[in-house]
Amino acid sequence: MSQPYQIIIGLEVHVQLQTESKLFCSCSTKFGQSPNTQTCPVCIGMPGVLPVMNRKAYELGVKAGAALNCHIAQFTKWDRKSYYYPDLPKAYQISQFDLPICHGGYLDISDPSGEHESRRIGIIRAHLEEDAGKSMHDEVSGKGDSRIDLNRTGTPLLEIVSEPDLRSPAEAKTYLTELKLLMNYLGVSDCNMQEGSLRVDANINLHIETEEGVIATPIVEIKNMNSFRAVE
Image (cartoon, rainbow, N blue to C red; front, side, top):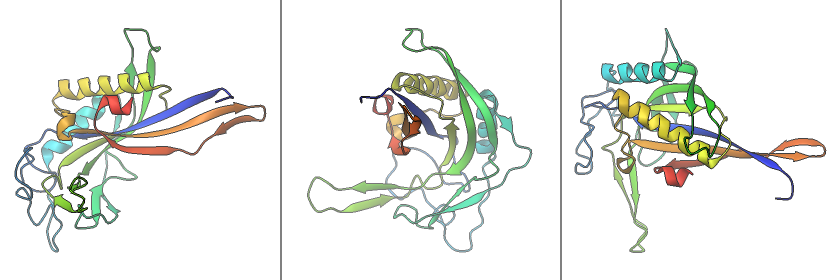
């Protein structure tokens, strides 16, 4: 670009909590089982079911929030995030909106190689939510078929939302590396990205310096990246 600019990056990291059962039912969270064999009326949202919260998921969420220097809420609640998608048959996700379990924290990052300076990255919130299912699209045979696996539906997640404090791809990678090490060390998550235990959405825009002042471009969200290389 002809004008100087600064890249502005914020990351939303979805961490699968290391529990043996789902967030609101007793179905297993074990990876790699046959499709649609780890479901029940609760996690697929049949009428009349009664969700019961997983105590272990709550404890892991609080542990992660404390390690991220967050304020832990004395009162929190659940919300319905309503949207339709084939792998979300009940057409809403149980999540947290205005009263998250953890908020207002930070994570310090540093790069031993000196590629960027040590920084403190703000954490807006870390909230609990349930995962949706998985859509598998056949783009090879040309039939255009899609298959749905609901085994992941209801799996407990902690969504960690950073402030838009990251200023380079290198900083984004360092932040994710530090976050993964912390979650592993605490036993909050195994963070196996190849199994979908850690997924990243990146919100990116540019601040462009002009003679009239700084112009901010629209924010673009890139969703569901599952490797540090892809994010960087």
